[in-house]
Image (tube, rainbow, N blue to C red; front, side, top):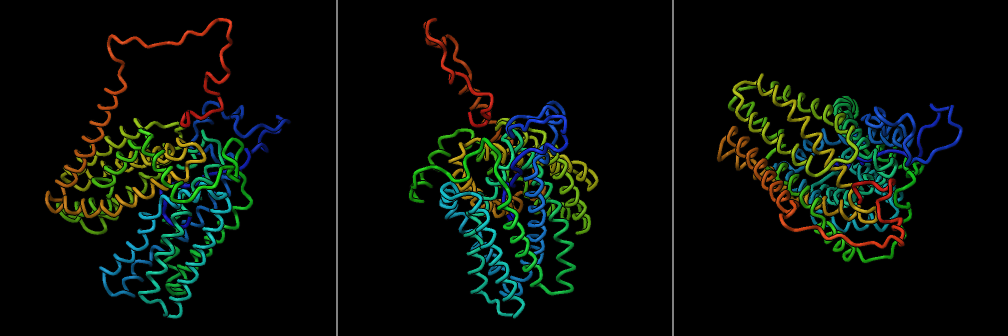
Length: 475
């Protein structure tokens, strides 16, 4: 959980009943409380009604602070050790390689192993790597070879740690509150980034670079210490999965087949991949726009980055009100963000860019939270680890390919042209996809639906209609 990962974990074991002394009988965690209907059920903070979520969010905050303390100094440290920007890039690629090559196997392992134990052990493993790095830095023993080995080990552990923590966290709240938990995780992540960057400066100034790695190691241990006290909410998959053992490769192949057989997951992948490769990388595109055609300074780009961060937090809060987002909604939001990107590329002044930047960040944050909710609730519980493994593999692929492609586009078309063409391409792909989906699902004229005749003497099956307790995302 200390590494940045697209799936933010969630909340708790049982609902908070201390605020309801007038109700003596305990309620099932899956049933909404009487006060939770209406406005309370739509609250972006509704996941905090569960005590486990409060502990999990506190652990998430500590972990993110430690992570950003390390990330603040990591690239400079690697550049100092290697003395080469190319070697620094290689070290980042080495850390990302396991996610690209072994993401499927890591997801299969998460489905096969107990998630609570997997999450806790992975935190301890990452803590050991952070402490080892801190010791090598403190004694001036960290060389290029050791750096590459530690980067590879970090990436390897992350292939299991990411989906394990995400799914375990989501089991701490009812399915209807997963979007709230993911949104809260986004807010916690942004808050941890702000705090971590500030703490890194103070810690490194007083204790040296190794202090940032040591602090990150302690944050991992804090998460590992909290996990044993958290219990999944009733209604999720059992903590000890009751499924026959499979070889990792066979299980990974089964997960890939399931993923490709779900059109909504494939559509979500296409929307997210295109949006990530030709837009959303605002740290690159807007930096080039501000310092180039708009003739702004680094400080002015810092203002743009601040607006982006604030908009992301607002978007996460708004997204927390959703309960069962659809892929169509996600596509519409992504298309809206792409059109705003086109407008941003055409803005003549920095002030107008700031006006456009805020809704861009809000739309992106809502879309990402909705997508993560679909990804983590659509598959059946026994397949979610493998689905996240497929997602991690594809995400690593477009994460590596996207920046070079976007950079080439901006060099060819210029900063404004890159933003405009990228936004139009995203909107066009999403529009074509929605049109194809509408044509495929439209009823054919002249074809009458065939209905089965059920004798009146035969009572309807109790399983003929979906259960009210069954989440719509799984049906």
